[in-house]
Length: 243
Image 1 (spheres, rainbow, N blue to C red):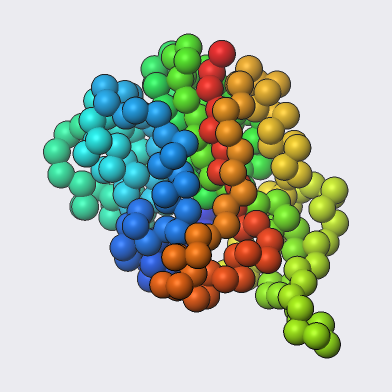
Image 2 (image 1 turned 45 degrees about the horizontal axis):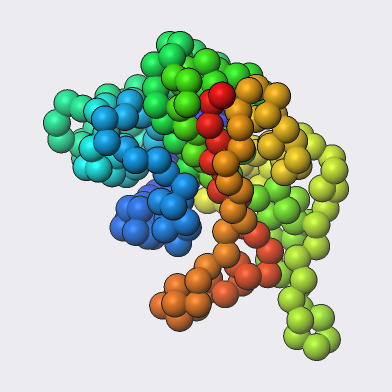
């Protein structure tokens, strides 16, 4: 069973104050890049894996999705999503992505934002998603970039000239990584980028696009803290299609 850090009261309180949770999708600087990867949502059946507060689920319905199934391991997340979601085209369920079962040939789009790096058996999850998609169905997801995850130091280091470096630690050693983020010992799983892409290919997906997120100048002008995201990729955005 996956670690459910999101129901830790301290973690949940801190996480809830992130701009992307206060302001929704518009508070996520990578959102415009994600939108460019999405298929036309009209008439689509969507599954949102690690749906959190339901921001994307509501966006999908607002943009014509026929239905959305939002899944998350966190009871607190699901309770908040249900409270904030009107209508009956979105259903939310508590689910562990490490043990996920989905009906075959059900969905047109599987979407996930920053959840898959918490999954220990990524190959199993990808195979489950592939089976659940109709032929030609889409998978669009974001993950913490493995270079970011493998950084040996939580912040950049400046040399005597003021240049920034992000030391990478044991990039080729895949497996568990723990970090302190709103709570002690948050468990993630480091995989090389090649492992992520090859796992998709092996499961029968065709890769459509890989983006390594970097903020636009206008975003940095509005939020100067984003400038450090130019030093190393923080997120990988991936779009694939079921053959």
